[in-house]
Length: 179
Length: 453
Image (cartoon, rainbow over all chains, first blue to last red; front, top):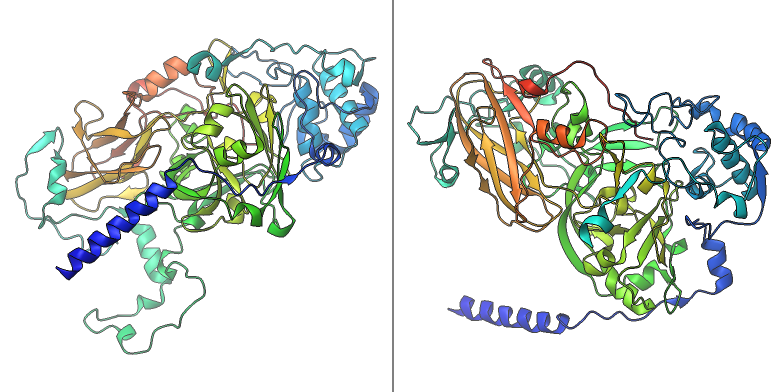
């Protein structure tokens, strides 16, 4: 009997607590102001419309030198892949028995190359390439995939205008099915 | 578990079958007095383990030596028994970058619905950062009223919320796309999924504080690892049930699970649950990161690919008996496994012991929670004949897990992600269990089309 009373009291206490927490959750507002200058130092994302692309530029021949020094050990001399992804030189189409998903056959946005190479590559020294070097490597990879010509220079203006061959190759499952 | 005395032949009671080839009414599990035979890992492994054990010398269970010497002292942090040291994750990493790869949870060695923290699967793109929480900040900025930094200490003061849910890599089970069935143990094939109680700050609390007002916006999340993982999350999900998690199964996150903080998006593919979270940018559109375009998209036979397929579809598999195990004798066994769905609760799991000709409903272990592992069980009287065991889940949306042939015919062989077909285990007449495909699925060739970089 004593036990029953105790349990009832406990249950009531718990209900009481849950009533309090059922209010819309509000935080203690402990965020510290982030200034535009501070945000600039953190912000490394590059959007498909080119926003976030930094100043600077690079061309195909500069990119080739960097690629051979820092990329080819994992991706192969011509981007045909080794311990890491095949980047270029696809002989199979996406509908073939063994599709080759390269930058040229698969990647929908050129800006993604800049975003990814700047933040994640090379794997053993990520974030070590200067913006000019990232533009140059990006130019070389686009050239290897026959997307830009040998003389092209990549910068904030030109990169965002590069249209990738597989730009229309994707079905947006979120937008098309859930909205 | 391979103790033959434990595995004594059960009395030949006649039970009422609920499907062909010995599947029995799931309610029998609740009755007492049934003797089950233990399905064990192969006899060779069991013997090897005994030979290595210090207790290989003759011990009288009626009077064991550990009752005659004081036991080990206390410990600051407990570890599994030395006799369980084979219950481990199975790592597979890039040959040039040892922190790029994944490690599988040994689902076939575990019971219940919670994955122990040390066995939670890992998928890292460039290793596990060793983050000093005092030097870590979360920045929320972009289309917000007040761009803000938060320290870990700040965030630990916020109201918290817990959810028990599964977390599954989008590439889990993808060896199922192989043309030939892989022979790995169940967990080392399907174990890029785990289930934990995650506790943290509802993301909506923080987003409301900094001021977001458009549910069509996206949240671009970034991790503080050497990959600087970034991914785009629809605001609708972020405001619905996303958690900024600090605790896993009651303790602070392990480094390999995102210490000091990570996102948990219940039911959505693992890569979006960004570990080591350091930045959230509110934007009008997705960033189109490498891992939402070049990877984590599913190439279809048409040559088009699905993108932003974020919810994990319902899946189930039998964890015991499963590939590599050995039924040492005929008799009564418990078939058990796991089922889950990214869209809600599991409503039903059916099991077949005749390769899908007939099905019986399995018992679901309570609690059955949304977007969470659900343990299922059903008794099975094995008569020693060749049998094919399968499970299939139906979730509360009415979606039912497809046969492999259906999945392949709809999505082809090169989707790489979101493989959720029914798994078949063959039991031969000697009790050895192997992974098979249905006859019509078998064809020549091996390999899948992409690797894990």
